[in-house]
Image (cartoon, rainbow, N blue to C red; front, side, top):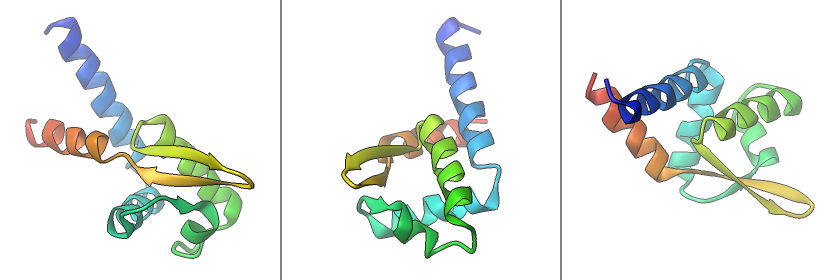
Length: 95
């Protein structure tokens, strides 16, 4: 396996871990259906979790590269990174 193949494997594993919780899958599905950047409060309204729990899940998804966070004071908007999600789909399908 080449170094780039290992790097791709590491990134795929990171995304799989991020999607390993049903709340994070629900967040990704909501943002994909929404098709725009959304504030955390709007996302909280979509999942039966506290604001702090949703914030932690958003952080995991952002750290994995699946979401992009954009400051829009006084809040942060979250958007699905379509290219990262498509890359995840391709990598997972190639297994």
